[in-house]
Amino acid sequence: MIPPPPTEVGPPGGTHDPEDSSGSPPSRDPRGPGRASPWLWIGLGCGGLFVLGVVLVVLIAFVLDDRGQDGDAPESGGTGAPTTTAAPRMNDTVEHDGILFTVTDTEVTDEIGDHSPLGEYLIVHIDVANAGVDEFWRDEQHVYTSSGERVEEDYGATLKLKSPIWQDLPVDGTPVGVSIAFDVESASDVSHIGLSSRFRGGNEIKVALGD
Image 1 (cartoon, rainbow, N blue to C red):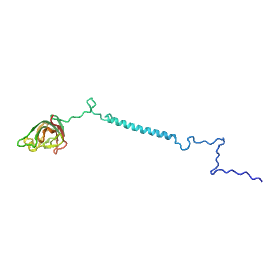
Image 2 (cartoon, rainbow, N blue to C red):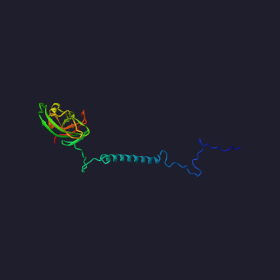
Image 3 (cartoon, rainbow, N blue to C red):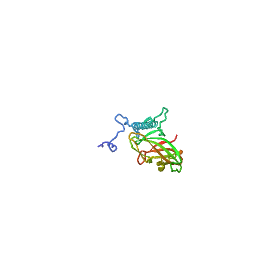
Image 4 (cartoon, one colour):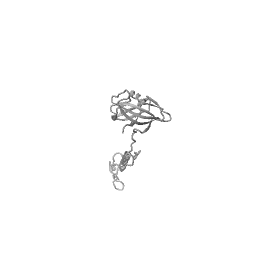
């Protein structure tokens, strides 16, 4: 008896014919193993463009804001330069914390009554008027030198000028004249006076003295 031909045994997991029924080799991924998807590169490119766009927008906003075009534009007199408000000076009337102040004059002397200064006396004449506050405390005013040194009034010398330590201000706004003496090293070195309407002083407004 002739034994049957032996049966071919394929690899584990079943047989695999390297060629299909048409005799052609099986199709393979044309991208080859390990190649990234083109959608990944497209996504990265779009992300990069988005980040670049955000950076450009931030830079443009910064430049516009720096030039004053993306906020409150500075006031100017038509020359492009910002306009600053000048500090009040002598004979300017300025309202501050409920009192109208006008520095009307200054004078320099080396004697007031029987008082003599260590340096020289600078007398500041001020008109004060009620604009909501009905009293003025004379002893809370100070003058300042060009270096910023604060000088208080000379109490005894000021009393000789017949200016009370506090002054009632008429309700109708009629100004009242007050004179205050300051013992300063050099009157020419005094740059401004600080005026306050408060009982304990503070929150002064600066008024330039001299020319």
